[in-house]
Image (cartoon, rainbow, N blue to C red):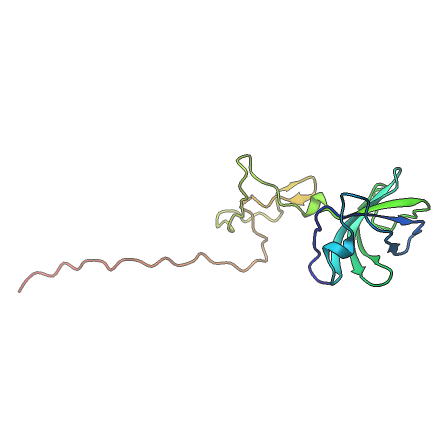
Length: 162
């Protein structure tokens, strides 16, 4: 699987897909189709919802006479699972980045990617809602990391003239 893409302003419908691939019906006015946004096809993040249930994940877009989005990895659904939902009515399918794939920003809008800390040898990672906090200074105990050496300036010698 390649790195999934997020496609801007993409929205299509699919009719009665069950638990299989979404056969895409085209975009409404003001939106783009998956095929317009990614003519060569490929892996995309998607959401699918029918008004009473929703799922999100990574799908493989196949562009052709009939455009389809095949579910590859279900990242979540409104039934708190990771299985494909059985959609029996018209479904809205669109591209968006799931929340657990977004790096949290600091209050000032910056992203912290801290280097491993020498001083923290704890066995467990600090977490928030089950996710490792990327801005902490924790490193897993099995990680191989050593403090980078810093060049030092030559030290003056004290030779007496002689």
